[in-house]
Image (cartoon, rainbow, N blue to C red; front, side, top):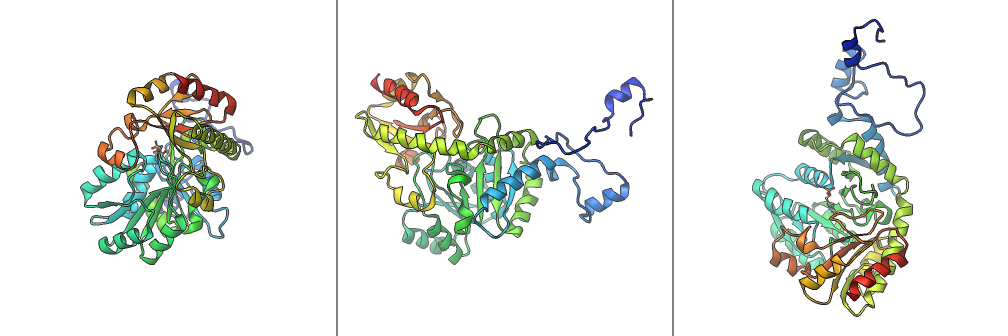
Length: 398
Ligand SMILES: *Cc1c(COP(=O)(O)O)cnc(C)c1O
């Protein structure tokens, strides 16, 4: 209890008595770096782990704890076992922490060429500095992966499905079974599908990572990431690393995601329905060379997507006829579709991978996997689909 008899300056500086009488309906944002101890004995017990309690927000914060429990509950909805989730400052924070926790000097990783650009850079430019080797395969051929695992003694497989920006899907059951037979750790970036459409823990994946900046938040107003796993040992390992890397989420950003999660399934249904209609529209347009959308029967991954996703997502990419100038002219003619280097927001966003997300990825390497100069990635929003198609139509005409 603070005394009202303090001097003016002290009243200003001191934390005042909290007026909480009963539980608030909505989760509060605990903007505090540390927590107080009633007595020194309490402090000792909490530090020793003999008593539950918070110490310092990098080691745990009540806002983050609630949000991560909710995310874990979504991820293991089909499972008997508990899932554990940890929130990070960004998707890259989750990917970096998950990799650092599960790799060591000499570790060998297999992944594919069409990953999120930042992840490719992290693996090839940062991780390799610490004695970690990275091998590429397209994960479409079982024999090829199996040969690579045996030849190189692989420790970890890192995939994205659907991939960015070509929406190629990888058979999760096949990869997970192969990993289990060879004691390989499996990590998947499930950002594009989101836990509403695809839950990789069901197939035996060890770690699922997200950029919650995208569909889980949905409003484009905060950065965030998450790492989710089923094994307590894996969780302890990742949490101990996270405490030290400091990539812990901000309670404000986590709270914004928590808010976004309340409309998450409704948004996803609208994203999926609009994206399918947009893909079908683009596919029949004479100026469009190719449409990559797993929901189209013409897409190479349609069968796999159908097997492991409940719907086909809100992301697609397409190539228009013509050269780079044609592509730039098309983009500059759009009125409603916004050019922004993010995805999964309620509004429709267009990105030109060659000049943005994949700018720093070697040109030869990106073209080899199909990220050409004319490729455009569309994050289809939840606006009225007729308005969206009209906007794309008039830009294509120009
Ligand atoms: C955006 C994104 C990331 C990186 O997430 P940040 O929150 O920007 O750090 C990683 N993977 C995928 C698939 C993404 O779309």
